[in-house]
Amino acid sequence: MSLPQQILSGDLRALARAATLIENRNSAADTLLRELFPHSGHAITIGITGAPGAGKSTLVDKLTHTLRQENKSVGIIAVDPTSPYTGGAILGDRIRMLAHHADPHVFIRSMATRGWLGGVAAATTDMAVLLDAAGKDVVLVETVGVGQDEVEIAKLAAVTVVVLVPGMGDDVQAIKAGIMEIADVFVVNKADHPMANQLRREIRSAMEMLEWRGWIPELVVTQATEGTGIDDLWSALERHFVYLNETGEIESRRQLAFRHRVRQLALGRVERRLDAALLAAGENDSDPYLAADRIVGELGLR
Image (cartoon, rainbow, N blue to C red):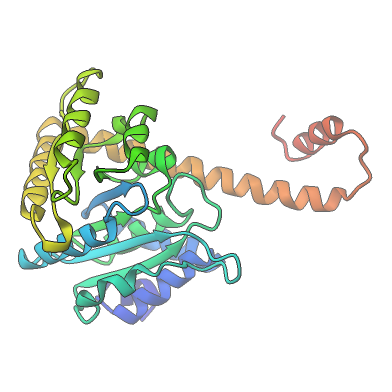
């Protein structure tokens, strides 16, 4: 039985091997994904973003518990900062989600950003396709948490959750800087903080400054460490899914994600050819502008 067939049949070891191929950008990954892509498009992809320390990992852990109570299988992609020594993920969200480690219906993968901007690793989209094709009902993508650059997740996920916590000025600045527009649901976590109500008012005030078309983001208050408000969060997400399907916006989001992925793949191929051309050029060119024009011409991109 081939690797794609093993994955489609529910083989967890095969799924883990495939995830490693994708994260390492192994040449076999493209062939694998081509075979699996027709079997994807069924899972709900939820992006969880926000500043470091907002409690995203705890929120994902508790939300997974709620989803499992509803008998939904879950794939978790936790994007972490990159170790400067190994190139791997240095936080290891799987350590923080040990409660689900033995659950065969929960697959958790920590991934390193490896220099990729936007809070999402370069292979995250491919990993989401893999988990989707493997039959996961919900794919949760937790970003690394780098502020306003997090908007990349909105191009991948069907729904984006922005997590904010009281007492951190960075979160309010992030709202002002443009991350607010990507939110489908806002979460004010650590609700027991004395400034929680003030943050809620600041979010409401910021929302009034924008013109919303269609869906208006909901605001949910949670205390993730205690599991408080998680059911409210899932209810808000379910209402958003209903909205997406009733309005047909789910298809437009999928088309946007498809075009974005094609662009990513095409740029990746061009960059690899460009790197090879630069290595071949060596140091013979003294004028960087002429060298760039020459290489572009050689690549047929003029």
